[in-house]
Image 1 (cartoon, rainbow over the protein chains, first blue to last red):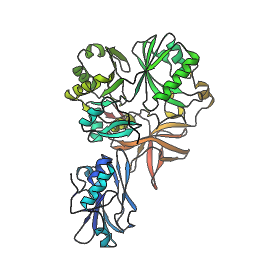
Image 2 (spheres, rainbow over the protein chains, first blue to last red; image 1 turned 90 degrees about the horizontal axis):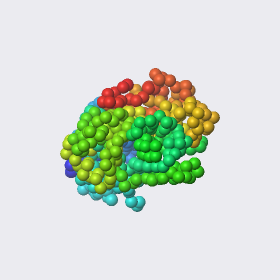
Image 3 (cartoon, chains in turn green, blue; image 1 turned 120 degrees about the vertical axis):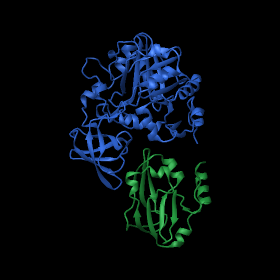
Image 4 (cartoon, rainbow over the protein chains, first blue to last red; image 1 turned 135 degrees about the vertical axis):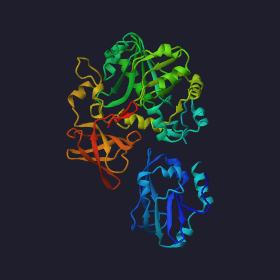
Length: 129
Length: 361
């Protein structure tokens, strides 16, 4: 599965989708879910929580391991995906559909500065060596 | 970069799409697809594991039983029928655990031992040093040239019989925890999953063909990821996590394997009798949402403890763990586990958590 070109990415393996109202939706990439394996638990940040860029704000746990999810930019959490409480495996089956949280960025320009799909793929490729 | 050791099945795993990881210095398959699917495959049907990284050690010569009586914490005199196996800890003089192993009684002049991969070299050095002092005529030889394939699950034995002509006649009568030789192969009705099945030792050269034949009969390859959740559900200790050289067997849930009642002396016995432990191993089931993991801190009204092994149980669909806690903690108690910045509730249970296809909690 390739990384959708309409999304932005972080080197810590989050994907970021900009919505029409300027909020962003955040999940973890295909590469990240594949590394972690079968997801069994997701802890998302509560709405209203203020986050700084690169702050640990969510946890995804597979059978094998726990991994932190980082805020891609600074801003305020607007929603958490409660459906993942009972179906964390959606991250494995549909990583770019199973979002973890939404946030309102403090600055839209921070989002524009994130990695594009090609730059993110270069990060993934460099980790393989 | 250090070179990882490979089993004879390395290329076969890669060809079958395995995700390979560094497992204690060995390049091993952690899963081939979904680890949870692989787990259920073994509980409900059957699957095969490459466990060739484990080491076979043969002890031969007159007096081998007498030597093992002294070397091992469990009593080899329980082994009276040729082929019968015994699970035992091997202890230091201070009562701490060097390794856990399985010993097979073949003849009065031949016992076969299977030890863990990561501890094999130190185990063999220890065995040889003890033999030099107490049984110098014994021949102790390890067999890294032997591969080992575990086929486990309710349908495992019949699949092995299909894949290996002639094996049914020899192995159908094996009682659990016993083994028989078949030419250059060694078929043991043992395992590390809580399911029926065989562990088969065979020459490295023959392993890829046997593995492929099993695959053609419908046996699915299973990675070491599922092996860990299967053994944890089955309540089986993992050396290096649930016990090591810093603890003894009595505080590691292995009291049932230590014979302190007979007159027999063995290495570590005096230390165990002199120092009864204040802690014990219990099972935990997490009541809140989250996943229990090794080294998480456990808080109880009797004092603190620590999780030794924790994961998600695919059979129970809950998080489970083994934890070392103060003796006062009882089955049915609720304790707290520190996970990141939170204290989550867990119930103390009697383990195993699941065996023979069924949850037991």
